Length: 448
Image (cartoon, rainbow, N blue to C red; front, top):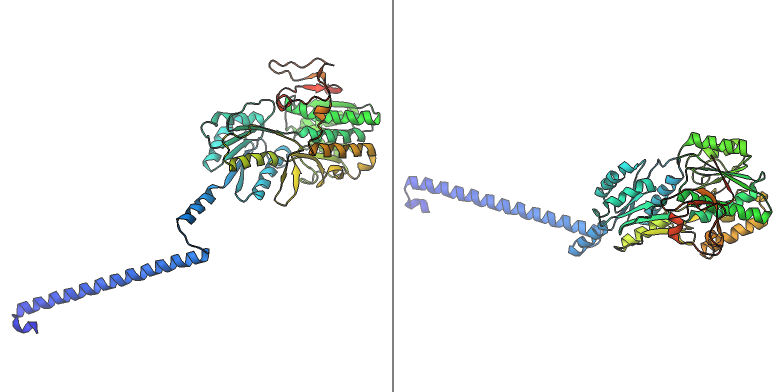
């Protein structure tokens, strides 16, 4: 119609314009349809995702998801030794595993063979990966953690106590009252010896070692008094915690030269146990149920062991951290009256006598049980129950009479032989036991 009134050139021009307009309309329409379809697809995807999750993804849910992720607590343990084949680091490792099983929001990580020069670099590496609690599982390599406590104020640090009691607001020192279970072991060992000679393969003089040995000694001496026996206790030091050849040599010497028929250790290798198996004498284990957890030897050699549940102490640290406690308790010295309920519902005290998966009187080897008088068995059961109830403690009950041997500390000499340092019935403080109990109890022979 319009082209009737226009010249030919103008008509061609109009046709081109109309063609361009038509193409433009088509392009715009196609773009809008595509955008609408993509929007619809995005909406459908969001709807499908929301439906599968069972709820909407509003701001509150996003915040809750973030909080859940932030609630994860990572426990990092720096082990001074290898884990496999050791009772000390093995017990710490088991504690980490058990806590990760108990709590859905707890993760356990570790490093092995950590010396003092690596403690801080490894700790900082672990913290950068998310560690919230960092433990040094021996004092000599755990103490350097104190140097970085201010740098990481939101991290809990922990170190085992040997004799140093230095703490910070977020630097926690810990140790279990292993001497309680060692006392029960001493009662059993004292009843089993027929030669009247018991040997201890030990690491080196330290407050930690001396204190634990003294718990065992008190048990042996109580058994000797009850049964009318004359029992000698021999101790020889290897010089370090893990020296298999030296430990083997000491065990062999104790048997061949001192007629020992019951042997125990304050070292970490399996050499003393190997010698006990070879020589056919009784062995008393430390730190873990070596038969039940490791399958080392059997109850024909292992009369009993004591088992340490470090998870009881770490559990307190984890719960304080969960609660946002800025000033947690900085010295943890827990005994048989403290416990933890594991993921499978089993309640276990901090330490206990254990053997082949059994505890208490049942932990005593079936082969050893007939050799132990009923009065000793009754006393083991009674004292164990009393300690679990928090009603009795060997270090409160007994007087501390110095043997005249031990470890001289700065400003704290070894008391003279025969000196009564603590009377019977007086409870020593945790601080004193952990840092000043530097002498052997009367009746022990320290071999050179």
